[in-house]
Length: 409
Ligand SMILES: [Zn+2]
Image 1 (cartoon, helix red, strand yellow):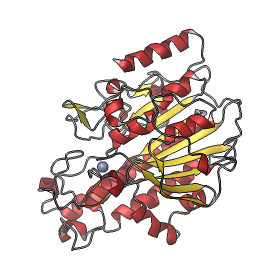
Image 2: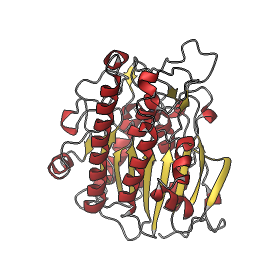
Image 3: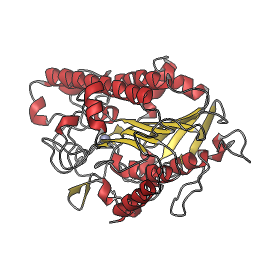
Image 4: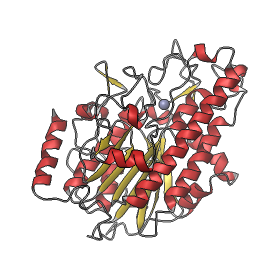
């Protein structure tokens, strides 16, 4: 098991006396500060009208003061597959987390065959804080803290189907590192949902569409409020050099409540005419979360907002069953998805702001890919890109392409 190798490396670091959680979890003066905000399946087609209407003021601020563009993703993208590519800068076949299910078992960190960025940063003395990042269950030791995200196993979780366990309902592994941190979170943040709510089945919806849609969206609001509180608590009480938080309700909402028109595949007025604002509203909700995170981002902090893929209404005429969507919930009437064979159909997105990053720069085409995120972050810390990483440093976003970043080490 290669992941066990990482554990051994980290154990060695601990024995060598590198400070761990509890002793030094605070921001180190020597290291740059980087905050990464992941938004699962952020769809530029949906956020652009909201930006034009002024309904995402915080993201608009980041765009104005930074660089942004599409982010080329992997073929047949889904969250665990792409997030593991983002964190290792290797192909899904190389890092091993090829989908929600790998060999019939729900993807987990024991399958990871390449070293993720949090391990590399930890080894280099960078303090790391992470919450809700998909495919980080069971949590791995870091020089800081880690709270797992999507695919955390718990009560009522079947293999390969997403569920929404609360922190107290987690089963089959640790959702919090260090384990002692869990009690502190329960006390100060409460018993929060680790992932977004699972989608309702066709059976649950039938005859109760409006009621089910409204109550599902209410639950999503509760989860987003909890995540906002969690992120704010972590950034206030446990600031780290490198911080990575992720939101996942946007993607889930898009799958069955994307604002499609009657000509789209799968249109059912009983569902799709009820809350056409539901999906765009997720991004307005996300923008508020971003506003709360931005309170902790000063002019010396690098902020990266990264989406693993977009999401589009059903297409691909060659599919015999366009509703077939095995990744989330097998019976939900899915009208939009992202696991198309050609990942370029559903690019993710990338936003960067911080010292030495160009202002008002738009990356055209596919200048940035999911492989480039980890090398660019390592570069900010002055850490050499490991050989196995397939991406490159996005030097085009920095003012001084020669020196790239004024290394602060
Ligand atoms: Zn999805």
